[in-house]
Image (cartoon, rainbow, N blue to C red):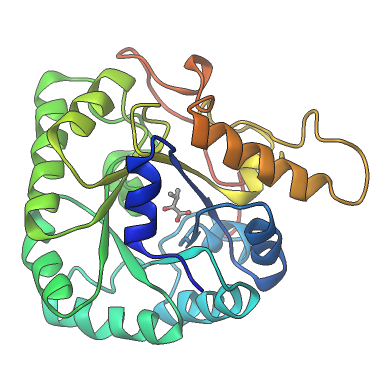
Length: 283
Ligand code: KIV
């Protein structure tokens, strides 16, 4: 039986945090299930990691739908989220609904969209239509050109206030979960205190309800990983099940709050996070 938002909320109420990994295919997804990873995100990072492109922008709705169906066929238990790619939800709430339906029909249980208060009408329509929504605030990878690179967000007071306001607006619109990416630890903590929904950090704070890492990053396949990445293959026992053990250790460390450590989060003076998600170069 596939996990649900209620199962995740009960786990949190019992004092255990939620683990999430990105995944794009049935084979790795099955190993994640065996390792008791709670949630799988079919992220638009597949643009870099699967398609060899240099950003998430060229990823199409059908690309995500295809990989969601692969992950759904490979698993029975983890909660399954799908990223809505760049250009598939910004035009209007109706455009977002049409495209979210495609991802839900492919097997997703929740869709993730990048942005803040400006997405409130879209989040309202999706949730009213029975589609659970995960927001994504802080560093928005699909805004890389507008941001001038992959940079930590929220270091200035005004920016930090806007991130907290965005989190409140996304929650008020009906989102049930929110990814907080590359935000200084003190600002991420303010966000977590300001909202009740499930918060999932990546380069944010151990105060979040859970954590997400990108598959290739946590398996040590990224040449120059961002500070928020921990390579779980380091110290994994040699042998056929090294990847299973790496996923298992990640899930356990997230559950108990052992990950992220202070070395994986940003202070207020942080800057560029480099070129994350596999450091691929392409087109
Ligand atoms: O697309 C993705 O993999 C993501 C993670 C960086 C959270 O959104």
